Length: 243
Image (tube, rainbow, N blue to C red):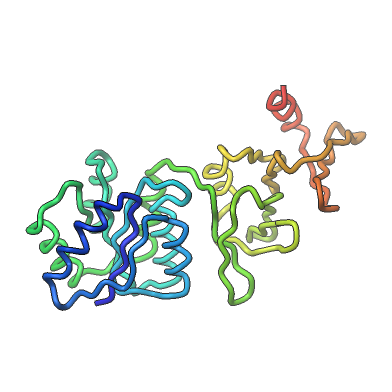
């Protein structure tokens, strides 16, 4: 089985890779301490087994698990975590295995035996992710057959259009694969604001606001000509944000 490891602790990567050498049926394909590099690799190179840390800067492990299980459902995922609270209980309830740091060789081998005989659908990771609060600095966007990692800072706004989210950057529009509510929750620490039920705007990209006769506002951006609506019930909240 081809194995990929993503963990922002290099010592943890080294420990795991040394133990994996004792199991001939498992071969390390790649290891990453940068979650963004790891996800970029996995989008192009599916693996059989992914060992995945959860709390990492840049891209949280939960988001990576959702994306990979959707794009490459044959990939088996084992979370590696230092937290033994509700997250671990959620994994047990959903039959998804995990390694609690620090773990022993015996625990790892038990995990490997379990993963060889279990499968987990995409809905499992969605359910676990829904119980886990995290933020994102980068999200996946889709352009026909291409998958692109988009830094939050490059996004001007996200639009919900006929049930599909469209991610607008300076030069491109990408299709998202999550709901607008998801993006609102995960990008809220990156100056994103829900101006309307159909729009999530990056306020750091805003240029000006122009009032309309019905107590709504038009929002203009720096560097692009697009204009989006600020609904009447969001105007007060928006003013409070800037004050």
